[in-house]
Length: 361
Image (cartoon, rainbow, N blue to C red):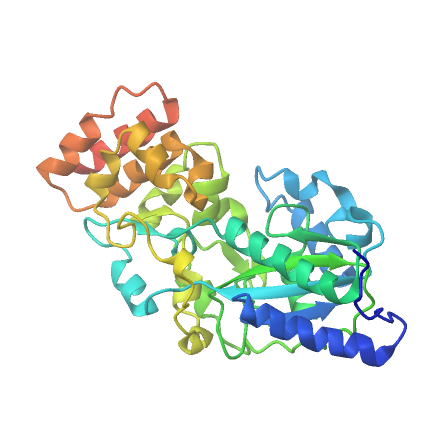
C-alpha cells in the first residue's frame, strides 16, 4: 500500500524542534523520566578517560581500552551518527532508608538496588527500540542504534551534555531533582536534532561519597580507582578478593550503593513505578545462610533474567562467603561455610577458609 504520511522535512528547523518535543513526550509515555539530546564533542571526557586508563584504575576491565577512541567518538563506533538521544529511567523501588538499615546487617545480604529486579539492559533496550520506531513513524527510515551499557559508549558524559545531570564526585550521574537512582540509555542517530544545554555541577564542597566509601575507592573528587571498588571486586573481577578489602565489604554480596545512599542529592529521589524493577526472590531482605545454600539449579532458575546472572554461580558463592565471614558468629554460619570447604573452585575455597577463620580461628 502507498505510504500516505506527510513527508518529514529534515531541513526545516521548526520540524526538528517539534520532533524533539515529541521525542520527549514519547519517552515519558514509554516509562523514561527524561530525555535529552547531545552533540558528539567528548574531547574533555576522552582526556579524563585516557588519564584514568594510564593510571591502571580500570584493573582487569580491559574492554575499557580495547576499542580505542570509539568509546569517546560516537561517529567512529556508528558511522553517520551526529546526535545522541540520552534517556534516564528511575529504578529505586523502596525508600533508601530501608537500604541504609540493611548495610552491614549481622545476618542478611546486601544486593545493589539496581540488580534486585529484572535486568535493566532488557528493559531499557526494549523501550528505546520502541522510541526509535515512534520516531521512524514520523520521519520515515533513519539511521540509529540503541545502546544500554553494552558497548563502548561514554554514557555519563553524553547524558551530562544532554542536560540530564552532572557527573558527581563519586563518578555517577546526579540529577538536581531526582538524585542518582536511575539507569541511562542511548539512541545514536543521524537526525540533526537541536541539542540541549549541559547542566552545571552542584557537588560544591560536599565530600560525603569520598568519606563513606568502605574501601576508599574514590581516591579524589571525580576519580574512582575501580580496583578498590566493591562493585568491581564482587562483579567485574575474576580474581579472589584481596584480603585488605574483605572486612570492609561487610555483607555486600553484589555491588555497593554507599556513595549513593549518603549523597545529599538523593533526598529528592522518588520511588520508581516500574514493575520490572521490583525485587525478585526476596533479594532485598534475604539471609546470607539461605542464599549460600542455593544449589546451582536453584540459582540458575532464580537469576534468570536478572543482571546478577552475569557473574556466575561460583562467584556468587565466593562473594557470599566473604559476607558470611563478616556476619555474626553462629553454628548455622559455621556449618554453612564448612559445607563448601571442598569446592572445586580455588577462589571459593580461599574465601571460605578466610571466612571460617573469622569465626573459629
